Image 1: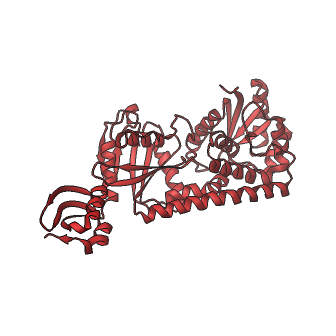
Image 2: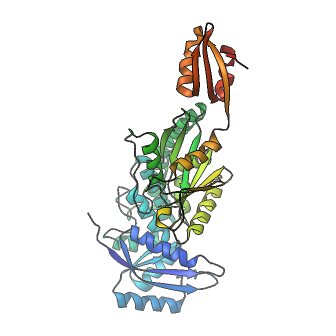
Image 3: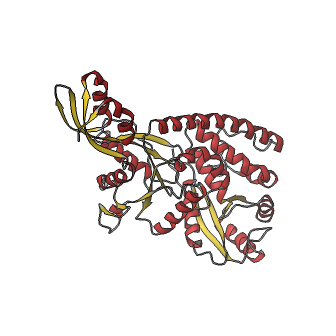
Length: 422
């Protein structure tokens, strides 16, 4: 069902040397749209600093009041995170619902969260956002409805009655449950490391096509799978980390991880709450940075993602840049240069080129050899047929002769059990 659209005016302050201001306001429009809010108008101000009491100056406040009356709009969205005193003062001055960028992002996350882990992460982030703003938020929360702004999606229906102590107790209880899920995820990660299977992580700005690319790769290398991940042309379609095994024709395999997309000024409450999920990124062997090549500001998307990767301690991990959505541009594709590949997940073009790039990074520890396996070590023949790229097999008096490419770790592990033929 379509949600009823609220109408709003967006407001932003451009500080000195802030060259990405126009982009951030456009992004705020997109965030509002993802919350089913129609942006009717916008008001901007250039200033050396944000006004500590009302975010904008007195003259701009009067201008905003006139715009609200002219458009008959009752919601204002600000392009930064507001303090509790700013929320309270703006409510008193304008008598409308006040929202900020953080509330919008939290609201989208609440709407999209499907798994228990994602729901816990979002609820903790929202409660931590609310905690210092209880006084300022009361009026705005009381007036909200129609599908925007800190929805009551099971995240504690008695928000207005919760005092600080009860919110803190709720956060502690939720964090405890989240820690158990995070511990289970850590065990799974350690098991994967023990199995020595390389991990490749898809990262990038929200809505660049990471999930679509993952589905395209699964369809190509595991056509019988029904493990498609949710993919849709909208902000933050993916909040859950999905891990899929990709098995190549030569028996080499790796784990492909899809992660939550990034956005500029991602609220620190969310980064903190989603840390256990985002740890998947920091422990990957290779990152595939998916870029929406059709976006007018694709360089900015790359910059935001790289800044987030630095914050996660994942910036030093080897990275391939996959420029997606080339079918919407004049760019020739598929095309490879260095660690960059231009492709289209939608058109299923450039997947082979991407896989070859991935292959060159994560399968460096393979050795080619010719070995003779005694008949009493038949289990090794079965193992190498399953886990190595066997190029030739013949049977001799002393045992099974195999020419193969296998992991160096497997070669060392079993070298006492076969004879290498020089």
